[in-house]
Image 1 (tube, rainbow, N blue to C red):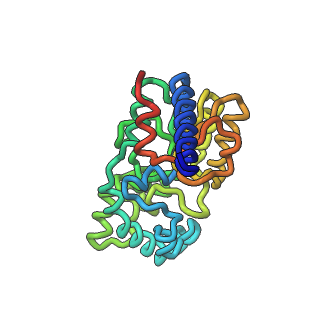
Image 2 (image 1 turned 30 degrees about the horizontal axis):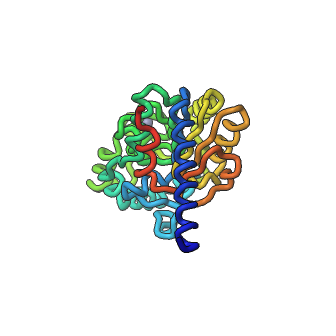
Image 3 (image 1 turned 45 degrees about the vertical axis):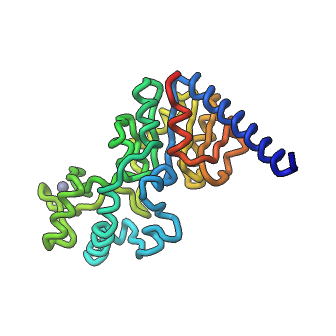
Length: 261
Ligand code: ZN
């Protein structure tokens, strides 16, 4: 055996041990809080907004105040929305999303907190989803808070209404995502906080865990006695406090981790 194959064998054994650790932790957990970021949806073809080719790199970012105060900004915002909508609308949940649906079916998922706005967790079958950054599959009225499906809003824009308003009250209609400069939704923040305090295992998937408040959840869960598993392609600042860190493809490893005994 040359030194490379010794190294490879060692690496293989080590990853098997880490996998078994994570598997046992998940199997023993009763109140799991899942937490997902862009990484779980890139495998469904949805680009990470923060990546060099992402939406934020290509387009002028319109902050919330500007959306509210300028019709021109609203027109540009909706134009960007229309451009990215087909990709979002046609994306399908992947094996990673389905693994979280399986955990919920097993009755062991306390909540699923997500930074994603693509609605793929719900389409995979999860009902206990907390969307910290809102959703792009609906548009909401900023005045009366009523919602309509994004398909309907897109149809109105394409039919020649470049900055649509609410049909009930005339308020400004905006994709129901959280914009820069807009407050995170209070109800979701509260629900996420409650779930984090009540979990026995925190499973962070596809997030670099650097954006606050999201990054504080694993820390808080760990501090309160829960175990922590991180599945992400690149290192995160919280790897050092995790009970297991896995670097595999999410759609490959998650289904193996959550399969029933
Ligand atoms: Zn309204």
